[in-house]
Amino acid sequence: MAAASTKNKRKKLIQLIHIGKGKMGLPDAAYRALLEGAVGKSSCADMTVRQLESVLRVMRKNGFDVTPRRVKPEEKGRATLAQLEYIKGMWAKCARNTSDKALSAFVNRIARVRSLRFLTVETAQNVILALRDMMVKAGFDPDSSEKELPT
Image: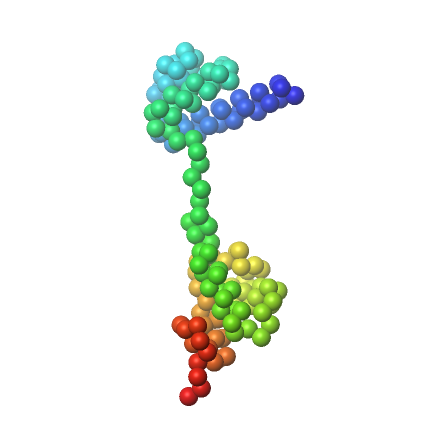
């Protein structure tokens, strides 16, 4: 079992080194020089786990950041948390059936997605506009927290 663990760790380190090579924009000659300077070998395939860790330390000192940056849902094009909360709040205020199932059916009808979590920023905006219309028809002011008075 220890051999499999070492093999997996070695594979992971080699992947990180190759990712670092790409992110740092190292041409092949510079990459090989970095390996030679760090441990005296020009290929990761010939290195031990300790040597691979040494190469990774050298790459970190030269600006490679190993920790992945967390991507926010809106950066992936998904609806923002504020949009989703706004949709849920408006739905709770003006729908006759306020269940999650009814909201999902409404979202599916408007945006052609099965769940709120699949909304993009644009499709969430379409749902919000439809809900604003629904609120006006139900006698609510979508820009206020109070019910509109009949005129």
